[in-house]
Length: 475
View 1 (cartoon, rainbow, N blue to C red):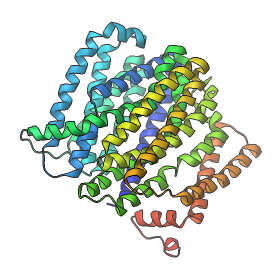
View 2 (view 1 turned 60 degrees about the vertical axis):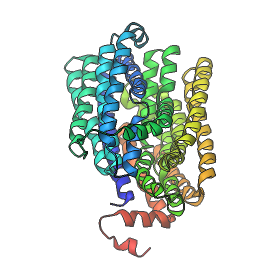
View 3 (view 1 turned 180 degrees about the vertical axis):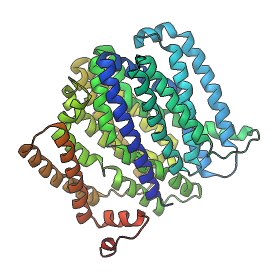
View 4 (view 1 turned 90 degrees about the vertical axis):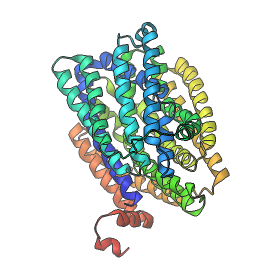
């Protein structure tokens, strides 16, 4: 299977996941209200940080070691290590439950321990499948998880179970995906060697900061906001963040598909032409959706936010800032993904350390001074710094080719789309159903113009279609 098809499968899976999550979120915000939904967001944000302590880079180490070699029992070694970490973290959570409950504003430590088990289980299964070059299978677990979660959450919340129903849906969705995914995992049931644990540790000791960096970007602002603003504003901020993240899923899919390919090449001692080419490909398609997405947010984002209920359109400018942050972070991610795949976690460690420190300081200072606008700006500035560092360190170990021409064509196509969408919004009603149609027309214009402008895009489409298209053969 071509990595392009793997990227598309992963993208479609995540898009399906996002759609089911989109529907579920609307039900939660409208049923629970801004305050209770904000409490749910805070608990899930705390869970995300605790999951890092319960993993410590182990998932990335498992994926890397499995992807690069046929020797070693890294699946069983990883599972044993993961269970041990979970037990330690669960005990610590129980010991600090009074302080934890006070911060979250709800007595939910026991719930948090259950959520953690489900989250770590499904993440571990997905990382094993990625390492075994089954990204296309692993990708399907995300929509299964989110769809199962949304169905259970909608059913329970509408039945009057409130926050308890929302948390139960989270656990059920993760466990369903973990059980299904484990069916495709292949492993040696024998006991792992000491060397297997040592090799996992040698990678995890650097890669744990990657998880911290990723979580810092995704939810440091939410944790800091919990100190300075109400949960209702956090709910609006989180919705804006989720919408911004929707446009970034294709870039994430490209990274996920290319990691095992680059890792396999580097394990053979080949850090040259092919890897340089794959990095260029990842940079080319990282902005394929989020560049027009940023333009679309600027034009119709205020209307889209109204779907979630009264008051959510106040997050329009937050949505705009966070979408731009997502654009920068997407390109940064391609550089760090390549460094990690060629077994240079030491370099990603440096980048991630600077990113985390700067993000923490900027969030604390700017949120204190400017509220949620400061939080969004801090996230954007951190992403920009990470992008600069990612480019610098990547260029020290491989030749970095920036596809400026292809990115320029994407910007040009998005510009044509912007004109069409702007004109349509002026001359027709701006009700939600009409805006949905306008978004569809704008998307069609963007990809049509890009198809005309970019020979590389046309070639990529043809190479990854399962059938031949005559018009493409005449390019």
